Amino acid sequence: MAKAPRRGPYICGIDAALDVVSGKWKGLILWELHAHGIRRFAELRRGLPGVSEKMLTQHLREMEEDGLVHRKVYAEVPPRVEYSLTEHGHTLNQALGPLGAWGAERLRREDSEMAGVGEAPHG
Amino acid sequence: MAKAPRRGPYICGIDAALDVVSGKWKGLILWELHAHGIRRFAELRRGLPGVSEKMLTQHLREMEEDGLVHRKVYAEVPPRVEYSLTEHGHTLNQALGPLGAWGAERLRREDSEMAGVGEAPHG
DNA sequence: TGAACCCCTTACTAAAAGGTAAGTACCGCA
DNA sequence: TGCGGTACTTACCTTTTAGTAAGGGGTTCA
Image 1 (cartoon, rainbow over the protein chains, first blue to last red):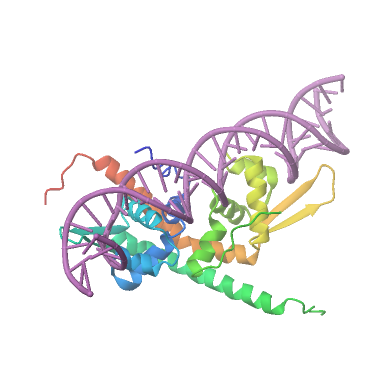
Image 2: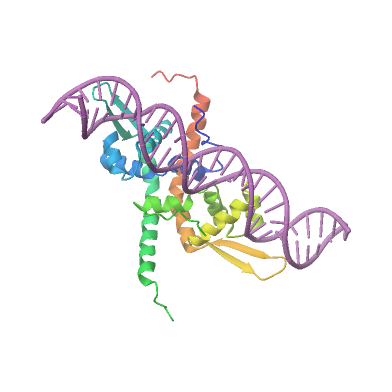
């Protein structure tokens, strides 16, 4: 395997949690799965504009190892695989709520600054 | 500069927030600053076992650009620089609270699994 | 004189993350 | 026969992140 240099000795909970969600698409995957309950591979791919199949598989596998997503394979042809959040995945999503709100507010702030550029608040 | 490929077009708030805290030591820096209020460069370095000066400077600068930390330089000799959280830094820290709790619980779970390996909970 | 401390900066290198493109194996449709 | 769809895997390459090591310009301490 030679993979997974992650999962180092964590210094605190933030460390451990950030490790699990760091990855370009993991936050979005979590969100998609939360919003739709169950998604198939191709559905996730379409829901994540710009993701490559490699990255999607890779992230999904890591999240499965981390106990965040459940992967159900149907022994059919053509193949069918369904992804959904485990209970830990759900609680993680809830824990990410405040962070998402903070980020959204930050985006709003940036927009405001954008609009206000050039205006010197001379007072 | 040729730096900062970050700050890409974010898809959602989680994205925007994770971008700001992703970095090996940023979570810890946030925590240190939150716990102590004001810290000098060398104090932070001592508080983050294993961090290099380069990374510390780099992270601090990025967090300053992101409006999370305040950097106060005293025109003294020897130089003195004090770091503290801005208001956005404080709110970010609060938003990270639930995530930290989730991570801490995850660590506890891992410990339990470690201890419980080999025991089949047969019922 | 020399050493340590202060807060960095720079150059070089290694490792990790991510992107591109192609291949796999089987199906239904035209 | 060829195309598109299913869910991946593999190889190769680039970008990003992190680590190592050294220097710099001034101070106080021994």
